Length: 510
Image 1: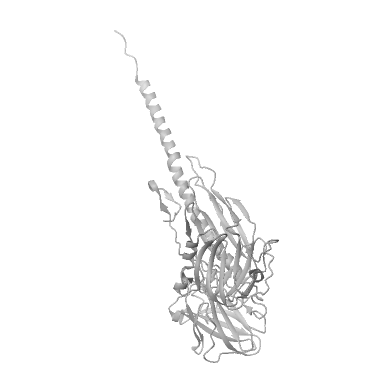
Image 2: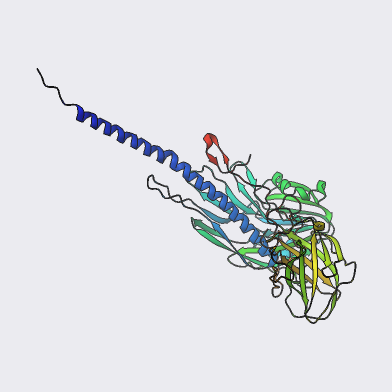
């Protein structure tokens, strides 16, 4: 009789091999499926963040142009994947931020009695035309998992995401606001790439201003967007909606915007990155009778403080100090209002604070100046005078971080433009701690007066009509510096959608 062979050892070996095989399959599945899905989510979250960075950059750029003061914006070019004890990540996602010429690369203005090159004081050397060059700023991501991610583009006061087959708007426009045309040409040669956060130093030149003779005006915009998209951006400015835009059409080199015959105020503040462009406008906003901006000299009426009304925090109390001789208020203008998150007010009432006496009622955002109904004196010798601002008859609630521009004229012929930062609700009149701008020394070009607004930080146009972001109240028209910084519109709220198989897609347009 033969002895039976021992087979138990073989069974253990086979089990170990099978177990190892299952482990290898599990790790392979984790590496092939789970790791890419997690990394894709990281990339999509970064895409949302960088879109927000570019919107903030837009706001800072428009504010710099409106105030004439430099601003710095931060843009995160990349991010990092989560550390893994098991599994391997690809190289960190990054991207590039660089200027790019779009369309014909130049603004072209056809307007009676006005030369755009003279207004901006800037042109391409050796160009031989009177057109003004302007670039776009484009973020291009380099991702491992998200297929065909969109570029994030800033051009002509607008931020949008450019997909291979469509564009999705993230802000409105600030170029056209009623009878004001506000341009912020970007003159820069900039390129950065990698995965770090970069600081973009925005340097504005002086703001030029000019007025056309009465007649039809056409502005050709160097853009990658189609006329239909610009018509959406300009919806509130269309003739059918009470605006001045009669037609928006595709032309070689960009999109042409036709305006109804009228006199138009055109402002232009050329901005650079890292250095101030050499621009010499023939007429600088704030000079030659243009008025002071946040005057700080001892002999003028300066804005000393901005606080909330203790009886109603939705009213603002402005305290002025007059270091010169006594003067009377002769006119007031509400140049624009910048609201980061919603539409701004459409009107403001100016009252004497202590007497609660109406001085100028229903000043429209970006509208004409109004004359006081009763005498309002500003006593001299460093005496203070307080005025109260009520928005939309008291129904609008100004928020901490909002921004407005008011222009006052006096009977001695002086005119001054005041940039007003809305203070926190805790900063009440008589309670200390005002929240408004301390007057800055002498005006800097590019800050308020006739134009439209624009975003950004800084002055931004009122966002009273869609698309929010195009300054409905426009930049500060009215002398002073142009307000080119428009509100940062929220007309294109984005939310990551899901593609086939439930995978996240980079918020593609419907």
